[in-house]
Image (cartoon, rainbow, N blue to C red; front, top):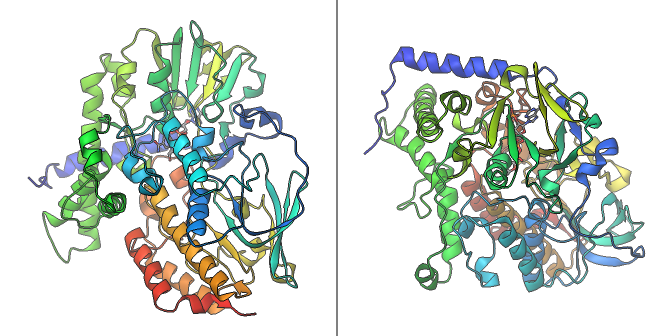
Length: 588
Ligand SMILES: NC(=O)C1=CN([C@@H]2O[C@H](COP(=O)(O)OP(=O)(O)OC[C@H]3O[C@@H](n4cnc5c(N)ncnc54)[C@H](OP(=O)(O)O)[C@@H]3O)[C@@H](O)[C@H]2O)C=CC1
């Protein structure tokens, strides 16, 4: 039955809006993103690799066909597709000690992927694997990354524990000169740069953080050698990571203090083992069908049947029903906005009611209720998190009224007038999100005539389809950049990898000298982005602060392709099959 759109009286709606605004204002901090510290310099300890011993090696001076910077899913998918396109010489480079990207770094207790494994874990049919659980544990995903690397023979020429420090185009040789922090200096015809999402930990700039003398680490560098039993443990942060970690360590810790600033929305999970009969019944092409179905549903498209039918898709369907169940066609932007808001309120009411159903202490329950719109923060899913606060050895410390933890001492955390003595502090405080070294400037790139890429982009990125820029031949970007993203980011990366490999494969087949869009092609794409980019500034500006909205200061310019990923992927396929390649392949 479609939901009734007019469930709220106007005064109720206004009261909810006012509550959201008040909670947002209470939480906002004037320093914005400057409130965080990089896990570098005196905090470098927090970014050190606890999983792989350092391996000495001699610097490399040679030449390869393709360098792929980043060995997470983006890099692995690009490597796999390049192999399928017949490219033999591929070198993947990563700062980690193995492949996996975010799944290499994040190994905290309870880690899972919150997107169904059959759509999240790529190349399942190619590797011949069916995930064991509906929502896969991190280690299963990491092992799948290893399996992809082995299947496509990507280990042969990898460089781990290595950071690329410079890319410089050599005009005469028509290839890139690559330098690394291990003294490597080599050449590559093509370079593909992954965006490095969710790998660089960030820390809150709590006054006195450097004085704490107990044990401490970040969730993405978990210290499996440290025994939590009997200890007074503090977890700072209740985002998607905190929601998974907290219930997993609560039974082990002597006492667990959960320091919360903004509560997450926590919906039902319903994880279960994969049904072997279902797995045996799968026909070739099954994964693509599921991935495309999920992508269509979560981006508001129409499908005959929702094949995944979980928390992500049901919320998307609710929003769609709100629209089609009422005015069907030609509704105005204002009506759409209004119906979206109603669907959102309804969803968040369900989320808040769930807290009351599960958490027995009324004050704790009240503090765990999120007061913001559903997509202001990443939604989370757990059948154990809220229940954890009924345990006698778990205390929720609500820091919202103080904008977070006020101070740290040698032995404690301070919130207002209250001090909490602890043995161990675990930072579940997230990552520097979505910035590749190329964009942040930590990986300088010099194109034709020594032109710095960030100079070329001084007024914002300039690309064709988000992949390449004029003046920077044979250089490809992977990730969120003038294209269309979605919650299943691995699907987006898979389409990008397929496209890049198709372009490089064709360039190799035709033996062209370089791949490069014209300035006009860049201009056309930028115009398309400007015309279509959804105006989500108002939505984000009204959201509670977080990394989605630059801690309450969203960027006024949206650089994404408005019609969304389904249309973008079609556009790429059409471009490739209708002569688009001739636009970027040059004989020299
Ligand atoms: N696919 C999956 O299953 C998973 C995906 N992820 C991805 O990783 C992303 C990052 O998640 P996560 O690691 O949880 O990081 P987040 O950035 O989402 O959360 C950081 C947490 O730290 C809190 N915090 C920061 N500073 C302070 C402070 N000074 N005092 C108290 N609390 C503070 C934040 O509070 P506040 O909200 O108030 O800022 C927030 O609760 C997710 O959005 C998701 O994309 C993570 C886990 C699982």
